[in-house]
Length: 328
Ligand SMILES: [Zn+2]
Image (cartoon, rainbow, N blue to C red):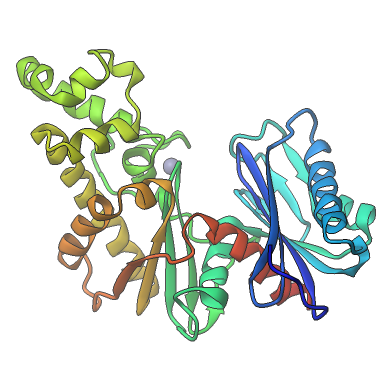
């Protein structure tokens, strides 16, 4: 564990649909300690109570009062209303409204602020990661879903409620063969996110001769039960040189390249970094086709596209950076 200086203790919270992770950080983004738990979904109030309890625990482990914390930044999957510090019908959390900043501030007497996790990730990257000093930058996550955060001319873009640039719902297939989790056809996330890659594979299998599908090691991996297929099966089979899996990975790569090209056309970044579990577990298979094909779909000069050096912690860095930016 790193020692904290007296200069400032900050709490960063990465609140997802399944896990909540909390770090104790200094102002330079050095994490002294962390705790992760499954999100307590027993009531809408339970989540803020859980974050307050973990914050107390982290402070007590380091022998200082919670009141010494300068601020708590929460990066959460939206939708949300940033100014009110609330989530509205959040993905994978079964409540219409989850109030976060107000109850936490009342409970701990420490200021708290909220940000969309992808916007937060962009801020984290520009504060602590690869985008330091970069005025035009976009962060993309390809994980369970697909999201983006963007900094344009040095300004973090947020939108009216903080839900800007929902790029996962960009249309990348006008035929709309697959329906996204949001209910609309043809969305990028409906094809290329970890949750929906199995739908893409099943759809493509239907177009192919049964003997071709049955000969693939991907089909054998799930013992012929395609309902059991997960995204990791596709990449594992591709890494073992299964020709059909390699073909599907390459098709997904073209769709990702279209999504990236749309982001480049919208924000004209000079640097893009990429994170999310699908990317981080399959770096070359995700990045190579994007780099290869993106230029075909955007008229803009293609930016540098790199894996985020902040890895799986980009949301936590984003939460800490948000607290420092908005609560200093
Ligand atoms: Zn959608």
